[in-house]
Image 1 (cartoon, rainbow, N blue to C red):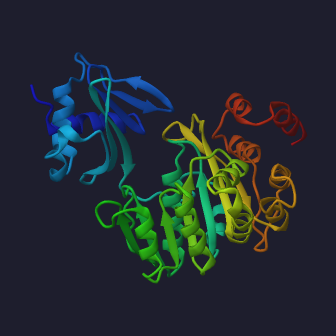
Image 2 (cartoon, rainbow, N blue to C red; image 1 turned 120 degrees about the vertical axis):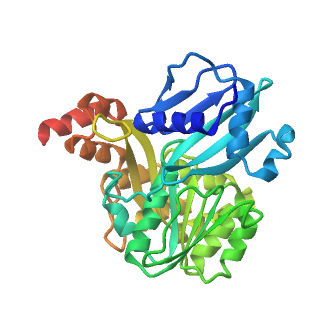
Image 3 (cartoon, rainbow, N blue to C red; image 1 turned 90 degrees about the vertical axis):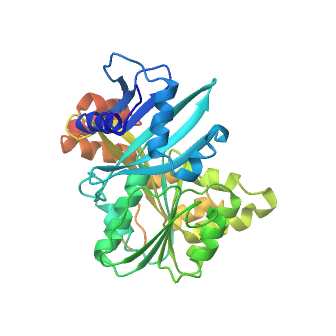
Length: 364
């Protein structure tokens, strides 16, 4: 019996009712839901078979991709369930089998307050030029945070925002700003050419999906140097790892120039990870380390001071010229605990220093 559109919609409904973030579909296994960070099998009398996965692909794939199905090794795209949600999916082959990961994306664009993110972010997006990096592991909510940041600008500023995404996840309505969302493969060939073109589209804000190589980093730095506010993501865990990753992509002879350009252009890094929560809708909240560049941070980036000194600057709540403060992971987790969003045991497991966290609880 074929896996129909009704079957797919029912599976999506189950996922939404259980506040799942993802659906895992693999041939020869039951579907699994990602709930509160854990994979939970869907109770069913039958496994998903190869034919079922192929049937789902027939529903969600673009027609031109279906024609080449047997030659596709992996594919990223978006499928929309009208008035329900958007689905960012990845199709892949493994061990002579096929599978799908479906990421559920709400139709409504998230807001900073709704996500329990730090109000510091509202001050960060008032910056007119510079580079802002959102970092974290895969699945840490980087795309959601970026969407909330763009939404904040859209609601409060009259700017032209150009996004370059692969694929487009959240659809932003026009509010105060004018938003041009461009999708790799559909609206433009690749990130590099899209970035170059964006510079000629009179943008105030440019959003890049990910800084992947030296060329994309150089283009992003150039965009910020020429008076634009640039948002991008990097797959790193914290501010120091982010700066180190960027510098590692360039040859030694270019390193001094890159350090100077990065010190001058980087305005903030927003590094994040998921922490389990009993109160949040999806069972997790985002904990963030926020670094804003000030003279001390710039000295570290340029190599005039050890890079590790940035940790002390963040923990002391260093501020920049706009008065925006740094925030460590531990400080944010403490705030989440005080708000009742994170339990004491979960907070103790998530902070850098459990003993420091307990001491601060006793003092406060």
